[in-house]
Length: 223
Image (cartoon, rainbow, N blue to C red; front, side):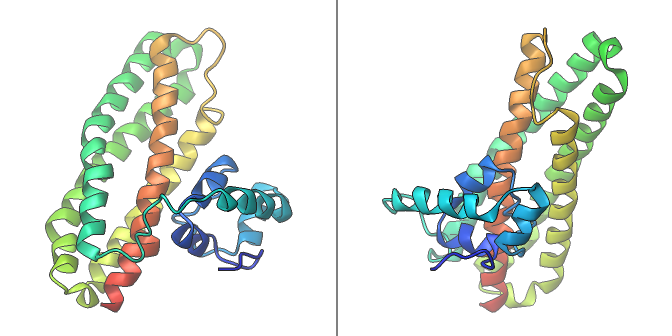
């Protein structure tokens, strides 16, 4: 595809998986915000689209097609990939992040009480919502899609997309509260590990939601 400032972010990420490296580098939302033209996404981040287009060209010129084109793979294979790559690790990582957030707040709360308390609140809410969200996908939506009934899943898909938007909002707030995951001076190892874990969570969730919103759901609804 020819990528211009009017090409949507989601379509670039779908056809060129390595483009997500550039988007992540600049904080461009390619999952929930995948329907935006590149120019609009750059404007929201205060970035010159020409810079991003240049970086995309450089990144994709080195693309040896090693990344799987999930828009061309069978839907059951994509579902298996989502569950194994994102759902299973999340079930382990979310409780770990909650435990660290609570510990940092308990030990260092007096240093930044309002911010650390809000981080705990968001991490707890995110864990609760994502765990329930994954159950609904695995027990209701994904079986429908795998059985070839995706065209009848308009309702469940709408619910999942709305929940993705909610998770995206919480992740953006965590990014703000952590100064883009920059540990404060003198932060202990747990504090640093929490910030790093939240940054990894955000990166993984962007790819996770992109695969569902921009590839799995549209293909399923057309099947």
